[in-house]
Length: 77
Image 1 (cartoon, rainbow, N blue to C red):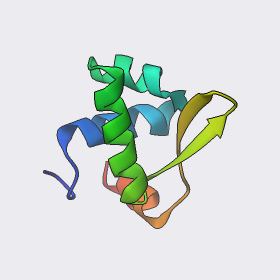
Image 2: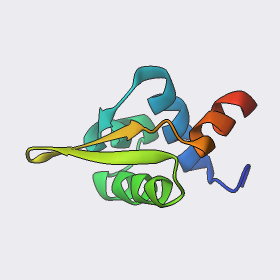
Image 3: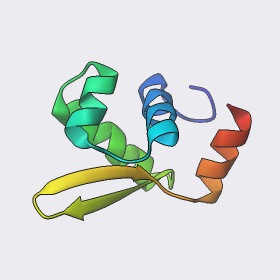
């Protein structure tokens, strides 16, 4: 675990930081994992303060939040 983040969490942050928000299914594609795995990774990153989870109607979109954690991540990567 680098920076207290799993390799999956780091991959999600990298993907979202460069391209903005993605629906959970898009995060799953980036990871090459199921939607349920992607949801758990996103939930963990939300809890850690790296992501905001925003709901647009029935879709759930995960986007990078401008938080202290996210800024520190961008500087370290």
